[in-house]
Image (cartoon, rainbow, N blue to C red; front, side):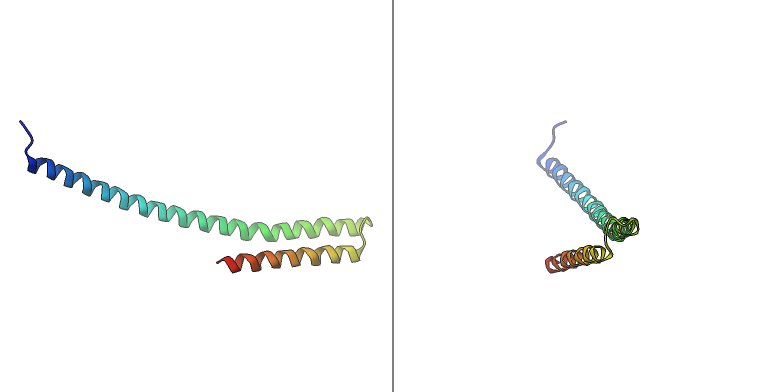
Length: 96
């Protein structure tokens, strides 16, 4: 049985609709995954920064208690670190 012109057009229409459906589903999945990864990495970034701050303060504080670092140097390092962090946040905010 030979295919007529109408059969081939209906086959092409069916394939086109099927491809559009698959692309629509793929876009929805891609959007959800992109949103999930963005949410995940934002959460991780916001969690890691305070933990790193505490680790740095803890290590430097231990050096002050042990006597290998003066309290003035401790304050200077913490102040410099906070200035760098605020500059980083300001730069990040200017790109959004």
